Length: 104
Image 1 (tube, rainbow, N blue to C red):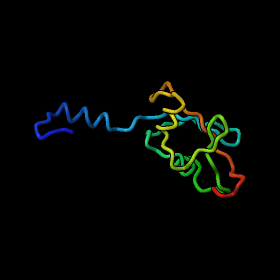
Image 2 (cartoon, rainbow, N blue to C red; image 1 turned 45 degrees about the vertical axis):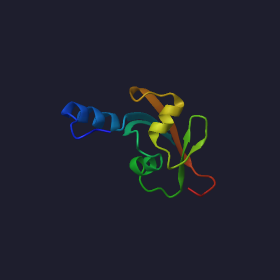
Image 3 (cartoon, rainbow, N blue to C red; image 1 turned 90 degrees about the vertical axis):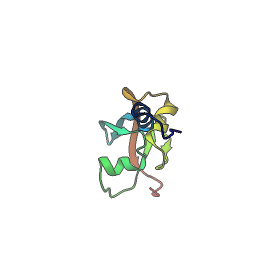
């Protein structure tokens, strides 16, 4: 922890390391693809709301292997598990699809 005597450089370094990274995401839906960037602490469940708005049918997010991703998962965790580095060169590929189980 930072003590009372911590200097400005120490505080700046601490806040930088605590700041979320930026994750580049390739989103696919209905044959279209969109490249977006989000903070690493953005959860998957926010992607539909942020990029598509309200939908008549419930949608789910799937990874490139076809696994449905839980709405609570942060993008930073997905990037780390996929071995993708934060920044402009790494890309997390995700797809949006209709939830055929109907549960959302």
